[in-house]
Length: 230
Image (tube, rainbow, N blue to C red; front, side):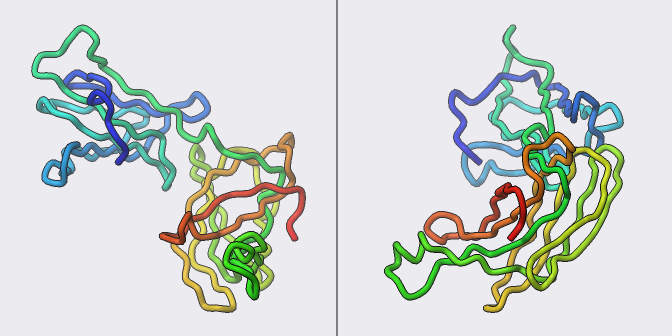
């Protein structure tokens, strides 16, 4: 959880959370609410899914400060803190709305290469971090799913890290990557990424690069787009 300046926005004790995607209601979004303000208050107070209208009703929360997470297929629609006052003011909102999937990078083909960006060898630690080595990740299980239609497609990365889902309909997809191996036997956590497939996209294919987060404290995946995979 991040900070909560001013205890966040004020909401009424009963309010609605609405989630859309490309202007359409998005059902099946997970909405969770926890207490905010110390470990002893961090209990889950509400858990539910948006209905066919893209909405879920939150009812009768007692006064306090809370944290809300809205997530679908491993991708967050929104996270924020809010508070319920003992007596609602005129500014108290009745609704929170989120747009899911509006930051998806675009490509023309659902294909590319999956690599591990590792530090180089034989130089100083700083130069090794600068001169990185791209190691292919083989046999990673990969799946894309259209959030609106539910259509899903699967493939696996080859020994050189290359993958392709073939010809897919245009749209926004969630790409789920699970497993995979490299020569040094390193393990990987599963990852979910948003990708928009469009003939008008700037780039042609995907380069998916796994690398350690800052300081090497934990793993992470970032998505880089380029014209063609190596």
